Amino acid sequence: MATSAEATSSTPFGFDHGRAGASVAREFERRKRNRDERTRKAHPRIGGLLLAVRNPPQSETAFHKGEIGELKIGAFLDKCATDGSITVLHDRRMPGGHGNIDHLAVAPTGVFVIDAKAIKGKVEVQAPLFGKPKLRVRGRDRTKLIDGLDRQVAAVRTVLEADGYQQAPVQGVLCFTDADLPLIGGKEIRGHLLLYGRGLRKRLAKKGPISLEASNTIAHAIARALPPA
Image (cartoon, rainbow, N blue to C red; front, side, top):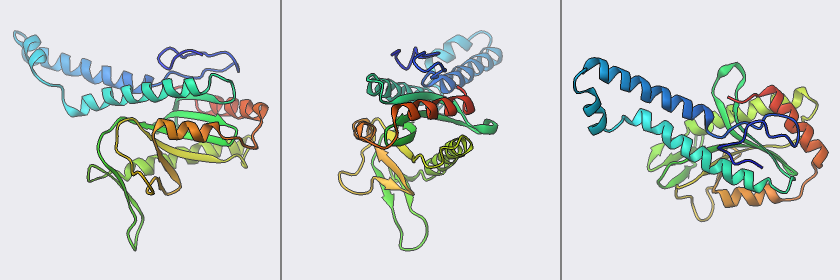
């Protein structure tokens, strides 16, 4: 199987598996190009020097870090899928153009909707006595990540229901590359899992009720409804 950076029209099941990090890479290049053009236009004589000595804004570098995280998790998932029991899709467009899904893995136990996160710091799940639980990373409220995962999971469930696979389990996952997850407990929030790659691999490798034939059909349905971003 092609690596995540190369995967395009991967042919075992006759559909486009997508390319990990493709859309976030395009956005990074767009922002970088626009900053370059603005700087050179505003400072025709020293624009090149300013670009060389100034650090890019965080709003730009965040997309580059996101691409690196998606490539890393994408390559890991492709390696998990080499035996043919798991089908992986990368960078799928959400209905109505409302964002994208980083990765999808169709495994014997169900469909995993995977949001790759290359962020650092301590991850905590705060469960107050009253109110909804919150996700914190480095002390900051990052619960919006869970809100986004809610929407992604709902979109995939809608696709499966339309194709008659409403019984197929759909599991949301925030997959971290560098963060510090709790050693025990606190690895789930609103039904979504908080995992490293190795924990995700264990979940994907479990035996389950979905046959290989059904898995391929489900992957086809998702690929058709959620094209590459």
